[in-house]
Image 1 (cartoon, rainbow, N blue to C red):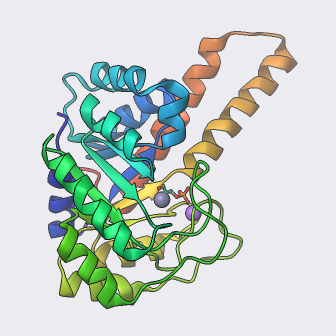
Image 2 (image 1 turned 90 degrees about the horizontal axis):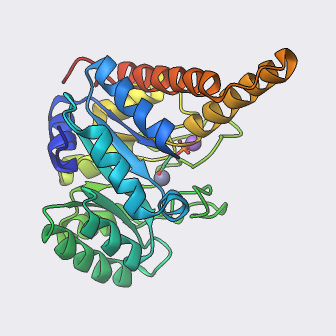
Amino acid sequence: AVVTLKEIVDRAFAERYGVPAINIVNDLTLENVLSGAVEARSPVIVQTSVKTVKSIGAGVLYAMWESMTRGIEVPVTLHLDHCPERAVISQCLALGWNSVLFDASELPVEENLRQTIEVVAEARGYGAHVEGEIEAITGVEDDHGSDIEGRRQSLEVSLDFIRRTGVDVFAPAIGNAHGVYKHEPILDFQRVSDIVEAQPVPIALHGGSGMTDEQFTDLIARGCAKVNISTALKILFMRSMLENLRVAEESDKWDPPTLFRSVAADVRGLTVELATKFGSAGRA
Ligand code: 13P
Ligand code: ZN
Ligand code: NA
């Protein structure tokens, strides 16, 4: 069934497993992230970037979500990823998105705090939930973010932000980055424990593509209940298309459904793999 983000992450946080939060890019990826979750008997968080919302259109995207999740047997939820635009947040909440990440990490902390409090109030009106971020996570995700080193805040500033805004999920910068890592990332594991011990809030782990299995396992045990994956799906999706197109060209057989079936199987496989790795498989 479609449930709230809070329902999914609170249980994962309490039982210390991670739930894949996967950025879909179109109907085919949406459909197969969902069927992968069903296959793995796992909850899943489906994420849409602002870019995806704008390219497909919020209304069409939401209609796809509604029709594809009708009668679904595992807990699923629809989340708007990194969104600095209040108008897009309002539009998605009004249509039925279950949660949003208000990304005001480019604003001064006080202004971020003030606006996050407003977004939380707005979301509550829809029974929806909010992920908060005060430190810009490095790397560019669908045009949002920057390549400069993430601006870190002190632990106290983070805790104060969590308490005063009442966000349901918190996304810290711990050396994680969007996109492909040039080297194995060096992560501040202790920061996750410090936050969770002082203020027990489920943590969102951004920049998941490229982290090692050991890093995932350690961070999930410390309280990262939502694990964001975007780049891995984009690369898989396009490589899968590319290989199928090569085969089409070599055999001179141009049958779109053959390509769709193959891409679908790959996306489903990635979702099952992530759910298994993060420990959410078999929980639904
Ligand atoms: P990656 O693109 O590195 O997987 O990061 C995903 C993410 O954090 C989406 O918000
Ligand atoms: Zn992110
Ligand atoms: Na990454």
